[in-house]
Image 1 (spheres, helix red, strand yellow):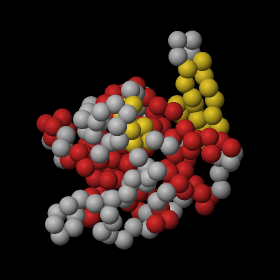
Image 2 (cartoon, helix red, strand yellow; image 1 turned 30 degrees about the vertical axis):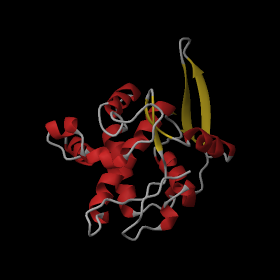
Image 3 (cartoon, one colour; image 1 turned 90 degrees about the vertical axis):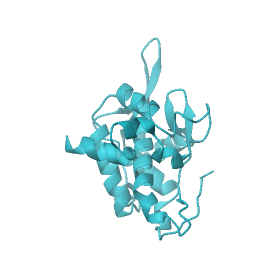
Image 4 (cartoon, one colour; image 1 turned 60 degrees about the vertical axis):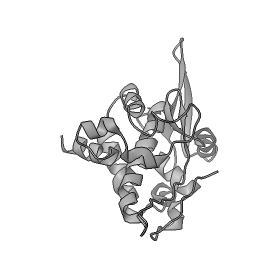
Length: 199
């Protein structure tokens, strides 16, 4: 079930819900270079967090409350923030032929690796608004090249993961209350990522 905050600015409803989430997943995949599921989960989280930070200033209502629409709920799991519907969504995409899932056995642990399959162009674009497209591109540029363990560790070091109970739903409103980022001079995760993009 998707989490919804009251909307106070026009948002294209076609960009919300399953098609948008499918498109976000497909954006980070490649036909030739598999990505493991842990890294994909973190890229999705950081793009959602940055999108929230970008949109939140535009959705402040007259009382100063922050309202926003999130199309995916993120949970605090042991390995960091994870979309609550990721397993079901990946299976739906695999059954549709849009991705390929491979279970790799490393002996002491196993992991899923994901590659892109045959995707219709209209689904790949998935009705993103301009802001969402820019955030996805920023996330891919700044975090897409680092290792799964590094991006996972980064997700553990910021809000809202830190203050959420195990298996709890992440409250994106805590993104602006992160002392670790503020100590480094960044208002939120979006500003941090924009700084990485300049380096």
